Amino acid sequence: MPHLKRWAQRQPDKPAAIFPDLGEAGVITFGALDALADAAARWLIAAGFAPGEGIALLLENEPAFLVMTYGAKRAGLMVTPLSIHLRPPEVAHVLTDSGARLLVYSPALSTLAEALPPDPPRIAVPEAMAALAATGDEPLPPRPIGREFLYSSGTTGLPKGIRRPLIPWEKRHEPEFDMSWKRLYGFGEDTVYLSPAPLYHAAPNRYVQRTIDGGGTAVITRRFDAAQCLGLIERYRITHSQWVPTMFVRLLALPEEVRRAHDLSSHRCAIHAAAPCPVPVKRAMIDWWGPILWEYYAGSEGIGTTVIDSETWLRKPGSVGRPAYGRVHILDDAGNPLPPGEVGRIWFEGGAPFAYHNDPAKTAEAYNDRGWATLHDLGWLDEEGFLYLSDRRADLIISGGVNVYPAEVEAVLARHPAVAEVAVVGAPDPEFGERPVALVVPAAGLSPDAAELQAYAAAHLAGPKRPVRILFVSELPRSEAGKLLRRVLKERLRAGL
Image (cartoon, rainbow, N blue to C red; front, side, top):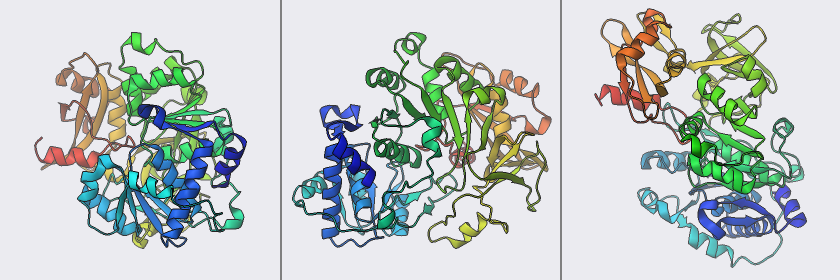
């Protein structure tokens, strides 16, 4: 991409990305990344790839992920990152649906790669990187700029693809996204960004590239480790970072001596999203790190974004903010506007258009007759226009004709000091249709009693909203993006696990 090339010319020896788990081999400078991206583009063009075709990446967090991403986009190709936690049928679905012509995979993931159908052809990272060394140094032909062809996390079914058009060659110098995020969070040439999440997920993928394209350095861990992240903030003088609420829970669970052992003074912006953050957890993080937390609500579809800073959140606890652009509307099932305080479906007006790849019916379901788009989440607005999330429509529990929003029940139970994490799902009931069941991860070192938690819920919730059972678990199933997998919990409940 032109932004990377500009920085490679100005600061070739500055690290563009650091993968601390890989030691010296995990440091890639702007000059090296730019040269390897050019080589990858030449390799793909020589292999006959035409603009608009695509490759897929089944890679761990490693330098090759960035090399192949930047290279494929320079060749005018679509890049589909694949979750390394998907099952073979899910990976096969994405490969088929995206039309990827090549799969590049990490040797550590060879078992998964070999379990896939033979088409498309695949190549391991060492062989791919060796091929780049033989590509010469001829200039690249002018081609449109490729893009990520991202797939949703599939929390309610098979992953759904969101494909956007290529960027014309003559617009290659223009920013790919609205630049308000850069001003809002203070990203710049001095940014050192910590990404403790998988690069195949949309948010870390985009923010790592935004950091590099802005001349900053991205520090990328292989996987999340709470104590390691604190050490990295001190070691690399991290200025910006991105998290999901589960990471906050694990950071807060660290012993006090570990939490206080590191100098975090360089850290000035901690962004979080992906899932609703329990109010007690976020308040504890602000108490610890200071008012540097920024929360946003958005989706891979790109239809809209809301944002809230720490100071505003302390005044509006639980809110995910107001729109960064466009407008938010809350409508009932008939499409009628709802007044402040009433829960309905969240619709964005004024966002960028999108379509689910190969699924016109699902695309049509995402739009209404006004052209507004939805992620099918439920929420409500207060009198000042601040958005509060409730749940996804698919997660709504209807018990005896009463709507029970799991997030409301979870918010109550999460306030109990013995609860680290909680999820509420609907279990089949012959009389009421469904009844809420709570699955609780106890706080470290504590052993709460189910009757105690049920009494606590009874003191704060109306009858139909009170969990009929409270089950204790060691952890909750989540996607690598931090989203709770309620369908997995429901399957386990039905199976009697």
